[in-house]
Image 1 (cartoon, helix red, strand yellow):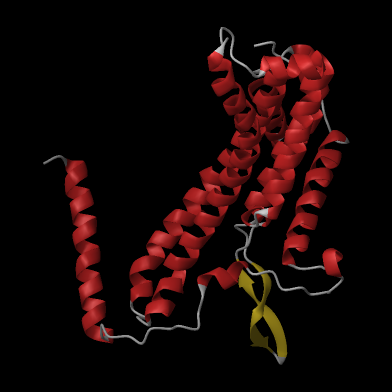
Image 2: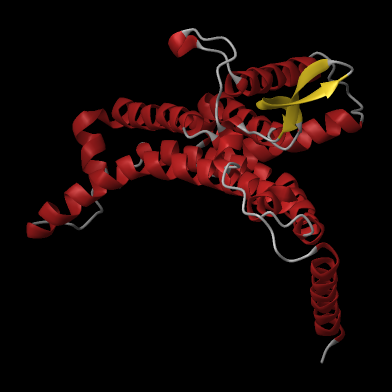
Length: 296
């Protein structure tokens, strides 16, 4: 057995022993909590009820995301130097990623110059929205704690992109953008023809044509669900492992066992998933816009 397997087996055995000991010490029987529902952690409670213009924590997170997206670029743009410091170097690396890898890597240079501001802003907006989602903020108004007589909302993890309406609106903007670009570049008839793979004729056209048109609308669904599901699932796993599962089952000692898993998932989501999902969304946007002007 390799040293790696020995370490993994040792860790698994350690956790099993700890779980058994905690069960013996604190008791393995618990009272199931039917009142606590994990989905309520993502519930939007209106702080100011104004109908469709109501203000809730989803609006707050979007406002913070917008401020950070605009403020960061304005701050950096006004402080560019010939000899960059560490902050400017990091921004230039990010700028190169958005311009070279995401935009120019998926469309012609003339189109890249035109669409880079849109795609770059989209990447930064989603990235900030995802990253803020892993910052505990006092936004859970259903649960409050008393601090020197003041009832303060509990700290919670929430991401605007974990609400399907936000990814859907972003996907709709992208959907309109690449279809507009395709019609503008090729005309309506030429754009529709470009959706059909080359070499498809006769009866096959009746089968392939509708499928290709449906696939265009499926891009709207794929963009929405991919971002929404990944962020929501990550937050739910963190909440479950950080104590939600122990509360639901009524087994307090279980939190000692699941908390390390919650920390590991939190670091994984923060370090990889938040950036990866922004990168994928922006890259697919560039691919769709670049492909919309292609004749086949």
